[in-house]
Length: 421
Image (cartoon, rainbow, N blue to C red; front, top):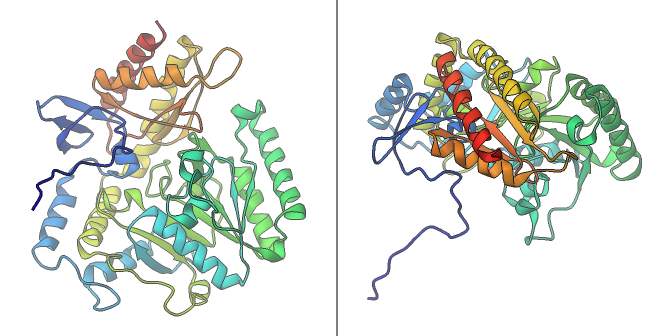
């Protein structure tokens, strides 16, 4: 027998140089016990911070009783309790849930449901969207060619419309919103007939596409058009849900009601769990056998999600996200005022992006990369996003304190200065 050693795929690239050994709250520690402020939160996953005691205790208790009860074979109480509990935070009328493991899987499930429920095949997405890496979800994704390239032909029936990215378009938010809605109307008149369009998929804030909030008026316009044409409005809340934006759901800022909500990431504080929620009348239109999966609704993940909901409520984390997010964005704007290379600071709650551009407005990926690395060197972990990788994003856990926000901004200011010197 030939001995061999296996290694990770060479295509996997780390955003930071850290080899983590443990996490605590807003911090990650490496093998030398160096402490880092983690403003990545596992890409918005560790909503209650690393290893919150209540989440840990709930998971430990569940591991000792039932780890896996496959929920189309047997039922288990953690799943039933979580379903009942989510009813108190889901949008009114969305009273049926289907669980899977990841955001991509939930997007696929929502697309399948939309096609079954409407008898239509097309889906509309927006420029800069990110909905996942599996084939259907990748076909809905336009945040960067790296998700779509080399795997074609992609799934047919996807039409891409303009997103109101005001900074990139060189417009005011109102102008960008009007432009994007006109483009959507044009798309419905030229590319995807309303009679062929099953659903509109939208993130309340572009994630991988550059941390660009969808203006409330834009979401209101989508709701009006969806109602007018009998199209389902699907809100991809994978990154924006569970208090991340300073409201429980990102679409709450617009006061609209979606037909389907997709949730994942912060749902279970780091345990794999995702779901779609829809009204009974809509969910019942899914064809028999179209929903299932081996690991969906895992008992340990459900126990962690229940504890996550407890922590969010007991510690007032939605309000904390709003307060700390405003504090963070204000301080980052002050840094940008001192460094014109940061052309725009934007976000909602604890989702804040810093866009680096040259004097003529072109993407400045090189400086963004240097600032990102300089921050890691100084003990602050961040991520980049945007089509050109020129947006440095900050995603601290919802438990972040004012002192931690201030410490992060101080490091960030030093990192930007170093990157531009």
